[in-house]
Image (cartoon, rainbow, N blue to C red; front, top):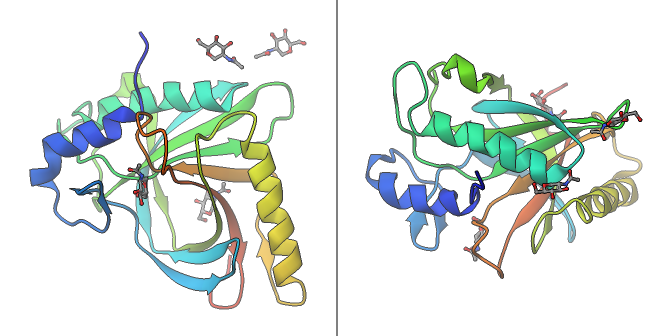
Length: 213
Ligand SMILES: *[C@@H]1O[C@H](CO)[C@@H](O)[C@H](O)[C@H]1NC(C)=O
Ligand SMILES: *[C@@H]1O[C@H](CO)[C@@H](O)[C@H](O)[C@H]1NC(C)=O
Ligand SMILES: *[C@@H]1O[C@H](CO)[C@@H](O)[C@H](O)[C@H]1NC(C)=O
Ligand SMILES: *[C@@H]1O[C@H](CO)[C@@H](O)[C@H](O)[C@H]1NC(C)=O
C-alpha cells in the first residue's frame, strides 16, 4: 500500500486541531506542536539550539534508502498517533518528523524515524507496531536549514556542509561534536508542498551554554 506519508501531517492537523492543547508553531494557518528550544548561538548558515526534555515515539527501520525507510517508519508512527496505543488516544500531528541515520557497518543502515509527542507520559504503542517511546534529556543540536525535498542524493551533502560550518566557526571554542557518524534529518512540510519547504540537518553538539553531555 502506497502511503502518502507527509501529506498526512497537515490533514491530521485539520482533524485534530481542536484537541491541540498548546501550539508553538503556525503552519499554513494551522497550529502544529513542536518541541521547545532556546537559541544558544546563531550564524549565517547554522544555529545552535538548546532543546528541553521531550518525548518521542520511534520506529527502527533497517534498510538502504533514507526516503524509503522514512516512509515505512512514518507509516507505523501514523498508526500510533491515530490510536494504536494502549489508551487508544489520538494525538495531534506534530512537526518535524525526524530520521536519525546510524552509519552502517555493512550495506544496511539503521534509521530511527521519530515524531514528537506533546505528552509527559505517552501511552505504550500497540506491540505489533514495534515502536518505542524515547525520553530525550535536554541537549544542544547544531541545525542547518535546507529547502526542497530531503532525498537520498542530497542529505549527505547537507550533513557535510554543516560539519564544515561547525569546523569553520567554532574552532578555538570548546565545542564537542557528539558523534560525527550519526545525524538527523528533520522534515517539516507535507509532500504536496512543492515550494517553500523546510528541512534541517541536526547534529548533537556541546558548546558553552549547553548541558554537559
Ligand atoms: C525505494 O522504494 C521504491 C518503491 O518501492 C523502489 O522502487 C526503490 O528501489 C527503493 N529504493 C531503494 C534504494 O531501496
Ligand atoms: C548487502 O550485501 C549482501 C552481500 O553482499 C547482500 O546479500 C544483501 O542483499 C545486501 N543487502 C542490501 C539491503 O542491499
Ligand atoms: C542526541 O542526544 C540525545 C540526548 O542525549 C539523544 O537522545 C539522541 O539519541 C542523540 N542523537 C543522535 C543522532 O545521536
Ligand atoms: C514548511 O514548514 C515551515 C516550518 O513549519 C513553515 O515555516 C513553512 O511555511 C512551511 N511551508 C509550506 C509551503 O507550508
